[in-house]
Structure formats: structure tokens, C-alpha cells
Image 1 (spheres, one colour):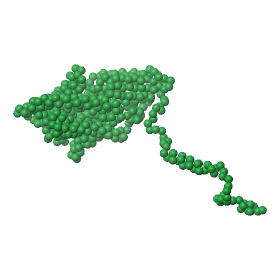
Image 2 (image 1 turned 90 degrees about the horizontal axis):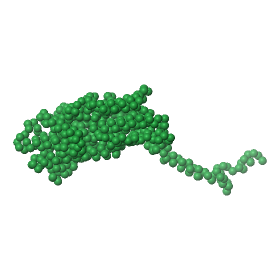
Image 3 (image 1 turned 180 degrees about the horizontal axis):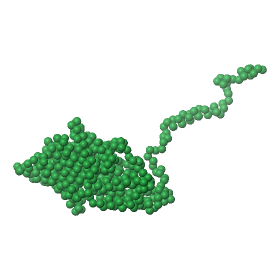
Image 4 (image 1 turned 90 degrees about the vertical axis):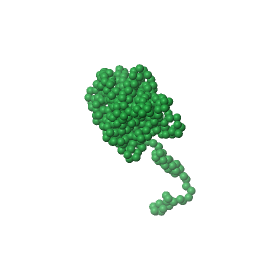
Length: 505
């Protein structure tokens, strides 16, 4: 038989010749195909990267750090954190600064927790060593930007020395320097701070186009407010009652002027007595932590933000009680203290810019800010007010124009912080005091005390306008600061600290 015949007798592989025995590989072909497609679908759907936010996966510690070194670093970090919170820093800035400091001393497993009245620092020292956790209570808060700037300079010097390979100061030396900074006297006497409050009052009434005699009355009122707050605080009076009594001072001066008008004895040049109250309210609002509370909320520190927000609410209620009590007394005597409807912001841009500049100068003096901080705040405040006035001319509402003006203020405040090493918080806060809603707060109080149900809606609108303005200020500053950080960047230590901070997880 030929070979070709034998080959042709074999069935073709693609030809079905009849019943055949099914082999094992042919049985598993269909399940194998299904498994391949199932694996492909799983690969498309299932995640392959680790979680963005890791939970409980950090196992490393600082085993190589001695017990004494760890305790010394924690003590220094707590002192720095307490000083920052006491002088007005936000929770996010405090946590970031403390993390930068401890990392400069070789501690990379630290955790920082901040509440309204305390700060806690913990160090994990591996599986063989006990962790260290120490809490320190913040005794009180008082805006003091000289000390805040000095503390930030201390931390920056330590971080830069560690980052550039230079010998950083040891913990004991840094602690001695910190004590020296915190115990140093103010850069100027207390009467200069009181003068700053008077300048703030003058600047506020200038924004409304008031004349020189009105400047004198507003300065006297703001000065008395500052002294009343000082004396009541030293006497140990609760902050709520201190705020109420202080708010009653400008309201009483305005009541006397209104009474003189009703008796035909008008004070020449004092056209709007209500401006005395408005200036006093702005001076009192400037010392509150409204921006700090909103900033903590935006940064994710909700416990601290809630406590600060409640404090702001109570202090604002104190203002309302003080002003309302005087207005109720005026109503009982038949003296009306209604706000003139023609009282509006804006007028001469140069005069308004000068008013905003004076307000920033006065606020810097009352908070003991340094020279560079004061100069930068004055320039940025004037620019911010001009942007605000331009927004009003373009038809933007008060809150919208405030937000637009706060964005460049926040950006320039951070730029000044990076270039001149001045406190960002001090520059930003001083620059936006002129935009605080003093007139809206006064109108809301006035309408609420009018005992007229028809104006309840208007009073609510004024109150919401004041709250919206405060939120617009904080939001605009936050956006401006964020944009400036994208432009100028952060140093490596600050980047690592910001990523590890709870609010930026």
C-alpha cells in the first residue's frame, strides 16, 4: 500500500466522521474560556493600587531615639504648640509647625492632636519601647503677633539647619531661646496699642465718608472700648460680660448724640451718630476668632472649629446684648437710634483706601505686630479695599465682592510670609478687618429690638448678610492662600508635615 493511500484514509481534523470519544482537554475548554473572561472583567473592576488614605499601616517607630531625647523633643514641641495657639494661630498652622519641628530633631512617628483648650503630642517608639504621649493645656488666648512671629522664626531656623546639613541647635538650647522669646516685653507700650484701637475707629468712619469731627468721636469711642476691655479682663470678668460692657460704650456715646439732636443741640459735623456704634462693633469683631474658626473648619479640624465658632457666637451675642441694652434704654426715653438709610460704604476711593490702611495699622498696633508685618498689612489692606470697591461698582453683592477681595489678600499674605518671613495669619487678618460686617450687625440688632413683626424678615436678611460676609472672607483667604502655595510651593519639611496633618489626610 502506498503511503499516500494510508494518509488519505485518516479523517480530516476539521471533519466530523461520526461518534468519537471525547477527551479530557476538550471537556475543560469552555470553563477555561469563561475563567479567562472572568479574570479580565475582574481586572477592569478591581482596584490594584493601595488606598489613598492608609489606616493603621505605619509600623515603624523611633527606636533609635533615647527616652530622654524623646521626652525633650515632646516638651519643646508642646511649648511651641501652646505658644502658637495662645497667640492666635490656627489649628492647621500649629499642627504643621509642630510636625516640622519634631521631624527636624529626627522624630518621624509623631502624632499631634489639637483641641480648643489643649494640645497632645505622641511618639511611637516601635514594638519594644513604650510610646510617649503628653498633653498640655492652653491657658488662654490673646492675639500677639510679635511672639507668634518669633516662635515661627525659631522653628524655621531649626528646620533649615537640619535641611541644609548644618548643626541644628540642641533641644535644650532651643528651649532656652523659646523661653526668652515668650518672656520678652512687647515692642511698644500699652498706650500705643490703645492708640491703635483709636486709629481703627477713625478708619471705619472714613469708609462711610464721615468728616474730621466724626473721626475724633470715633477715635474716643474706640479708645474707651479698648480700655474697658483691658480693665474688665484684668478684673477677671467673664469674656461675655466684658464684650457686652465694651459694646455698650460706643452705643452710649451714640445715644448721647441722638439725645442732643432730639433737644436741638446737634454736634457740628457729626452727621451719622450710628457710625460710632458701627466703629465700636468692628473694633470688637476684629478681636474675635471668626476667621480662625472658619479656617479650622475648612482645614478639617471640626472639633476646634466648633469650639471657636461657639466662642464667636457667644462674643457676638455679648455685643448684641450691650448695644441692645442701650438701644432699649433709648426707646424707653423716646430716643430713636435707627440707622440712616443713606449710610452706605464707598465714596472717594482715595479716602476709602486711606481708611482701610488706617484700620490695618491700628489692628497691627493692637496685636503688637512687627514693622514688616504692619507695612505689608497696610499695603495689602488698601489693595483689598480697592478690589472690594471695584466689585461693588461691577454690581456684585456685598458677600460676593468681599470674597473676590479676600482672594488676592490671601495670596499676597502667603507671598509675604514666604519672602519676608512674616506671619501669614497676621497679615491676612489685619488686611481684611475693614471688610468686617459691622454695619450689617448693627442693623440686625436695631431691627430685632424695634418690636415690629413686619421687619423680622429684614432683620434676618441683615443677620444672614453678616454671616455670609464672614464666610466669604474666610473662604476667599483660603482660596488665595491655596493658589499662592501652588505658585510658590512649600519646603519639603512643610510638604511632609501638611500631608501628615489630620486635616489634610
